[in-house]
Image (cartoon, rainbow, N blue to C red; front, side, top):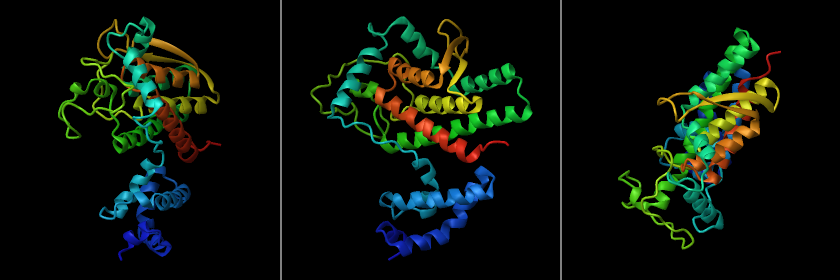
Length: 313
């Protein structure tokens, strides 16, 4: 029997043989990322440990090397979304149906403004925070480069892990759960869309979210992931959870793509809490999805900061 099949069945000798065969390859792409041979050696061992734990998910018809490389994205995979027959699902469905609809009478004008604030280009938003910190604290070249690298490396890793999870679970967006007729051909299911089979949820023809639904799966929330990761980066760099940051976002009264609105956040968790509800009020993410995204983003940031951004002293 070939090695990958024996490995999947738990054969220790097969795992050790695959480790010897692919160790150099895995180490090679890790060292290109972290630029430190010592750290890369440790991460290589850690990657193979995750590979061993995940062996039940290995497709024996696939390339072992390609699958091994994907385990770094799989590392932060959240638990599955709630069952469609659960009370958690019913609560989340009804909550976003009520508060996320474009014509909702339950959402306040302030909540609407906050939802639209977070429709801005999130990469521009957090790089503008970097520039503000640099200017306010008159940072030198080294610290400026370090913070810029932290924000963009950690942000990219958080989104990689988030998108991996999205396409792993392929969970449906509120607009297609609440109004199955909103589904157009996407190759993933019937038209109109599926019914959840739960008598406690009531579909509503013509229901549409406040903001236009992005064209990728729902769970977990990407804005939750990157915002939570950025909260961790800024609090780590500034050395305090109370970081007192101003963030620029979209002002609905201005031109398309503007960053004219400003919101102040005293604590890192204030930022995390707002993004959870902002995506709910926007009609884009169930509450549980944004919570999962926030947890994922923080875990990715903690990992990256610990392994790739060691103290300078």
